[in-house]
Image 1 (cartoon, rainbow, N blue to C red):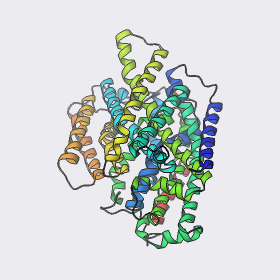
Image 2 (image 1 turned 30 degrees about the vertical axis):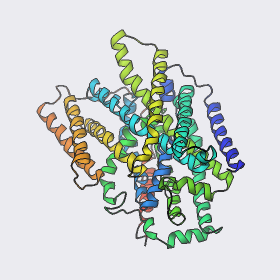
Image 3 (image 1 turned 135 degrees about the vertical axis):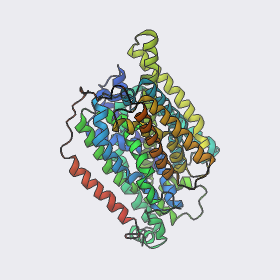
Image 4 (image 1 turned 30 degrees about the horizontal axis):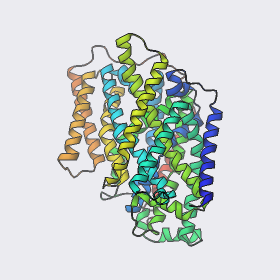
Length: 532
C-alpha cells in the first residue's frame, strides 16, 4: 500500500470531520428535536447533500458496478428514475409532513388512521433496518474498503475476518457521530462528502479509461464504445437485471416509497427551515442523482474490458480504483467510499433511534408514568442504537453467502417491507374515509401474499411486477373495506403547520429540466445511442 494513499485518505477524513464539527460546534443536543431533526434549521444545500449522500452508500458502489459488469447499464434505472419519485415527493408529500410537524413518517399514520397502525409500521421499519439496511451498509463499506486497501493481506487475516473488522470500524465511527453530533453534524458531513464524491465521479472514469488505454484515455474510451456494446444498453429486456418495463410498475412504487416514506431518507428533509428549502434541497439531490452513474456505473463498464475472470464480482469497483488511480486519488476515493458507508449507516442508525424512542418508547412511558424527561429519551436512544449496531455487525459478514448478487439481495429484501407500507400510506393520503382496520388488513394481506408468491409459488413474474400487482389488489381491498365500514368522522388535514409552507416558486421549471435530462440519459445508453 502506497504511503500517499494512506495520507490522502486520512487528510480527507480529517477535513470532513473538522469542518463538520466547526460549522455545527454551537449546536447543542438538549432535546429530541435537536438530535433527530437538527432543530429544524437545515437549508437547501445541506438537505440536498444529505439526501444524496444518505442514498449513495458503498452498497451502490459495489452493487451497481457489479451489476453493470455482470449484465449491462439497465441497473442505472434505479438511480436515474428516482428523479421522478423525488419530484413527486417534493410536490405532494413534503407539504403533508411539514404541515403536521412530523418527526417520523409513521406520524402521518397516527393522524390518518390510529396510534396502533403507527406502532405496527414503526416495528416493520425497525425490523427492515435490523435485517437489511444496517448489515448491508456495513458489508458494502467493508468490501469496498478492503478491496482498495487489501487489509486482509496486510494483516495476514482471512477475508471474512477483514470484512468483520471493517464492519466494526464503520459501525463504531457511525455510532460516535450519532451520539456526539446528532442529525445536524451528520447532514453537514454529508454535504462535504457530496462535493468529494462529485470530484471522485469525474476522476475515476478518466483514470479508468486511461488505464484501459495504456496511458491514453481516449483510446480507453474507444475500446468501451466499440467493443461489447451490449453492456452500454440501459433498456433492459426481461432477462436483464432491470427490465425496462419495471420502471413503470414496481420500480416507480419502490422509488416513491424510498424517497417519500423511508424514515432514514425523509428525516433529512423533515429538518428543513420551511417547505421552500426542502423543495430546493430535493431538486439539488435530483441533479446529483443524474451525475451519479459516473461512479456507480461507468467503472463497471470499464472493468468489463479489464477483468475477464475476477475472483469476486463484488470487488470490481474497489479493484479498479486501486489499479487505475494514482495513489493520492486512491486515498480520496477510499475516503469518499468510507464516508458514503458511514453516511448511510449514520442515517439508518439515527432513524432507528428516532422510530424506537419517539414512536414506541415515549408513548409507552407517557402511558405508564404520564411524563418523561428529554434526557431520559436521549439516553434510551443511545442504548438502543448500541443494540442495533451490534446486531448489524453480527449479520453483515454473512451477506457474502448470498448467491444472487449483492444489489439483488438489497432490493429483493427491501421489497418485503417497503411496498406494504407504501400502500397503506398512499391510500391514506388519497382518501378520507378508509378506516384503520383497512390499513391493518392491507398490511397483513400484502405481507402474506408477497411471501407466498415470491418464496413458495413461482409465478414467473419479475418481483417488481409482482409488487405492483399486489399493490393494486391491496389498495382495492382497502377501498372495499372502507366502502363497507367507512370512518364515522372523515380524516381532516391539520391547519396549523409547524413551519412556513410557501412552496418554491421556480420548482416547475427546474423539474422540467431534470426530467428532460433523465430521458436524455436513457436515450444515450440505448440502441438509439451508444449501444448500437
